[in-house]
Each structure stands twice: as C-alpha cells, then as structure tokens.
Image (tube, rainbow, N blue to C red):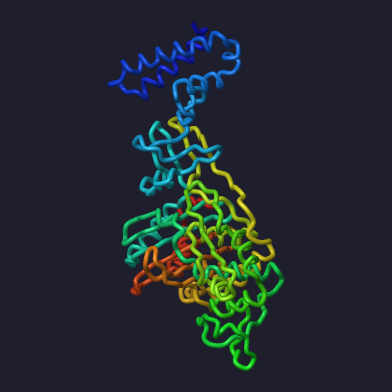
Length: 460
C-alpha cells in the first residue's frame, strides 16, 4: 500500500473525482477511485522515494493513468488554469498573462470604487482598465446620434491599457465589433506608405508632388506624370492631411517597391498576430506586384483590412517613439480575500518605426485636424482654454465596405499635452444617412479625456 505521503495525494485525487463526478454518480466515482488505487499502488511502492521528492511527477502519472488532462486545477498551489463565471470558462490563465476566452467580453456594468469590475466564480474579481466616465460618455454620445455602427477605442500609448472600449450596433452594445478585422483600412494605409518612403529617405514632409485631376481622383490616367498637365501641387505633409489619393500613388510608383511596402506593413502589425489578452483578428494587407494594384493599395484602395484595436495601437505606437505596446483590458485579478493574483505591466511588442520617423509622422498628421479632412471635428478646440495647448494628430479614412455593408468613416490619432497622452480609433458605418462621423466621435472622446475629470484616471 502507498506510504502516508502517497495516501494524502490519493485523498486529494478522491476529492477531485467527487467534485467532477457529482453526487448522482458517487458509487461509480468510488469504484473508479478503487481501480485507480489498485493500478497506482505498485507505482508508489516501486518508487516511493521518488514520489516523496518529486510530487509533481507523481501526480502527472496518476493523471495519465486516470485520463485526467493538464487543464484541471493543480492540487498543490490551488491556482486554476481558467476562471469561470456562472460555471462557464471566461479567462484562461496562460503563462504569466491572463487571456479572455473567445466569445467572452465584459459589458462593463458593475462599478466599485470608481472602477469597472467583474465578479467570477470562487470569489475572484477582475478589475478592468476601462475608465467608466470616458466609456459611459462616449457610449451615450454615439447612441444619441443613432449611428448604425459606432466604434471607439482609446489606449494609453505608454503601457497599452485600453481606457475606452465601445462598440454598438443599432444602439445595442456590441464589444465584439472591436475584435474583428473586416473593416477596410482605407486612407489609414497612407500612414504605412508615408513611413515606408520616409524610412528609405525618398521623401521629406516638405517634398512637393505635382499631379492633375482632383484631390480624390484615383487611377492610371492621373498618376502618370506629365509636366504640362500636372498643375496641382502639394507637399507630402499637406497631402497626408487632405488625404490626396494620387499623391500617394505617385510616391509609391516613383520611390517604393511592393516588397518594401509589405515589409513596412508587417512592422506595423499587418499579417501577424498581435499579442493581447483579447482575441483580436489579425489585420491583413495584400500588396500586389502589378503596378496598378500596387498604386491603388498604397493610396488605401487595396485589399487591406484592420481591426479597431489594431488601428488604435498604430496611433499609440507613433506617439510612443515608434514602439507598440501590448494592448490589454485586464488590470488586475484578486482572490476572495483581496489578494492580488495578477497585476498588469507595460509589455513591449515591437517597433513600427524609428523614434525620428514617428515624430515626423505625428507632425505630418497634425495637418489633418488643422486644415485637412478632420478640421471640422476639431475647430472648436482652439476656443477652449483647457484644450488650446493640447496637440492633436490624426488620419481619416473613408471607403465603402461589405462586412458590415455601409459607408466607413475612420479617424485614428493621438492627443497630448505632454502628460497624459491618449491614442484613439473611431469608426462609423452607415448607409448614407449620418449625423456624426468617426472624427466627431474621436473629438468627443478626446474632449472628455482632457476637459472633464475621468474617474480615477486610469492611464497613470
């Protein structure tokens, strides 16, 4: 028979079997346990010394004999491998960082001590990074304007905390909209094209590009150079702010290659998994080799799709010296006694650009809100004494998409008065009738962040 140490281990296995079998199957559980004891008694008697010195390996052998997988809680440290709500798994404890199980996203309904929390089975409590004041105000703003689809994500660029996490479908809160990468990136991709050209020292913000047609025309008839007909002229910074399509098609054809653009897109997080405690769909960028397809893609008209979370982190990385941090929603997890089992930390993911190019991009993106496509949403900031010194930089994007069907209006950007800084992504999808657009939502969110005191400001 097993020694006292082994007997204690078997008693714990017995308790686990009772819990997993249920009262209605108690006789079967006892019989099963007896069979397990018979099978493992020899194992203990042959190697009792090894069992006492290495209990973990012993439990592994018992589990293997019984068919118990590693997903069951540990019998020693009592730490579960996942946390449940109403007996349904919602958070997987994966290594050092907890991860939300696909299909579960908090609805941020319970506030304690000024913070959103979710109480789980076993007395565990999750404290979320989302700021209640910012979340509720932006939600009411979007719902009041009856936007068919409205999205707003805000992040702290320095640590990756998501401080606003709003997605709505016809006035119903739907946070799953934020995880999907089915939205066309549209002119947001001009950020990638600009970064690529700056990285290869092909352009500067003041490089002047001549073209013809109209500001938003696109096609081979417009991007083929002709000195006599190319009478329109803008600097690259002005073209980024006004989102002039032909300028970026010409930049790509003259200075870049498809492979260059693919590599820069990958550095920004396209075509790769972005680590997070949220299961984010990977954004994709298909850059074709044929020149016409390449030109279209560089101006934002290619097969390029992005998630709102990724879009916000692109803006965040540019305001963080070109470094993308790990986006996350879980700030900490406590047990029933209030002990902190997990506390978030700022986690470095990867660089998207050098600090110099990131600063240059932010300066170029300021033209969007000063005299570009986002100026209407921000023109009142200049008359507000608390916002006058806040520097806003952004990029808009407009295109028709199919999933969901509608007209897409993007704004991503950052706002800073040195400290704190906020990065946002805002999106509206409508069917041609609208009262607000993405830039309006972004402006409202940034206004709330700087002009109204958030609840125990999360960004730190």
